[in-house]
Length: 79
Image (tube, rainbow, N blue to C red; front, side, top):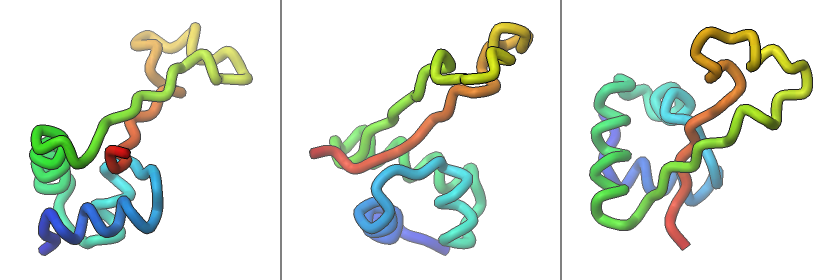
């Protein structure tokens, strides 16, 4: 089971990661990783970055019912 320090260290080494990537790397359940990421965000140590869907080259995001197929939620350490 990962700790807040493990998540912070992984973000420091990898830069930007999705929560699912952190969950796989640290072999920790995704809900636990999300809770720890939100705690780090509350502490001002991590920040959530949402990449816009207009980076989509195929244009398939416009046909997506939710419009979120190409957008990603990434996490990084605060500078």
